[in-house]
Length: 173
Image 1 (cartoon, rainbow, N blue to C red):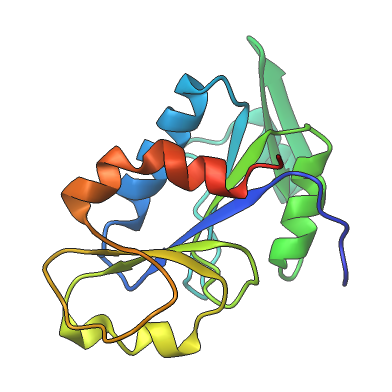
Image 2: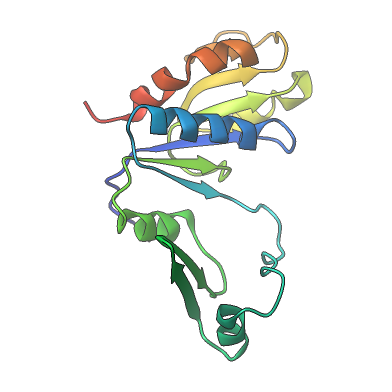
């Protein structure tokens, strides 16, 4: 399903426990400090559904009664739960476009075609670079021998200082 994309997307990818969530949080915070309306998507990565919130709230009762879509609004917050067999990143991005974000930070979805920041813990993670497209930068936990490459390589500490640049690299001119 091809989806026309309007908001810039910046992906954070890496193997489990590589620091993806921490980097995504920092990007979201930095985007907010730059005055951007930032949206986020995290790929669960497991083949099990997300667990519903504790307690049998009204929206959960609606879901259990068979509603495919449930929502709770209050205090300026809207929580939506949509039940369907599976979701593609394109479908989620199309939904997010309804809210006109300035930037969408995506954690995971390694095979998606969007600009990526790649986290590598060590030599054992180098194989990841062989399967990725559109790598904008690599962030390493320790110095690695990467050979020649068309993207910059940063340490974790250097990457923290580059967050605004990473964001600006995907923003329209």
